[in-house]
Length: 183
Image 1 (cartoon, rainbow, N blue to C red):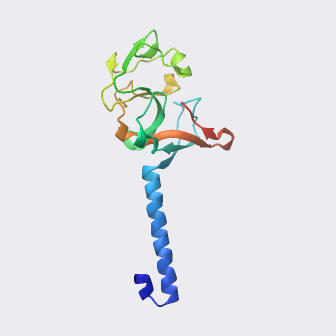
Image 2: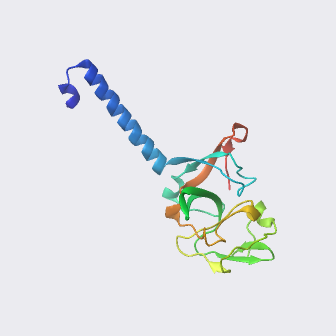
Image 3: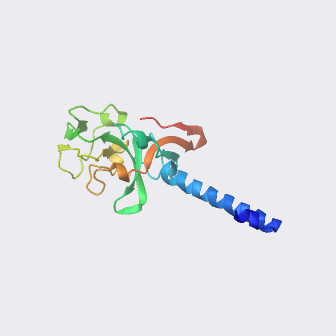
């Protein structure tokens, strides 16, 4: 159409480049906002699973076909400063009962089967427990449980699925720790 009307070869090539650049930009923003996102780990709340300075790939696709599960490591914006985000592990899904017993968090009466869940917890946080997780609410904790701001504190609270930026799937930096991040 427009391309056929332009007879000047320079302008025709320029138009092709502009169209290609615009399509690449649209594709980039689609992938970044709806498929994958890159995140850097800042702080030590997920040690030793993820450490300060790691770069990870977040998948946004996984939750198109399913819901977040126990053990998923997710990223979400911090309520008090949405330009910052937190990376934590889901230990409570809708319907679960979260409690604190014998210096450990328990889910539905059981200590979760994660290494960090076996550590004596110094602070149970400032929320009232036991508590039942509501619809579209998820309870998250950091793997370095005694050095983490997470759902046990009102400043973080429960996370909704719509607030999740994605599930951590791959650590790609540093290269010597490259690989899948599994629950």
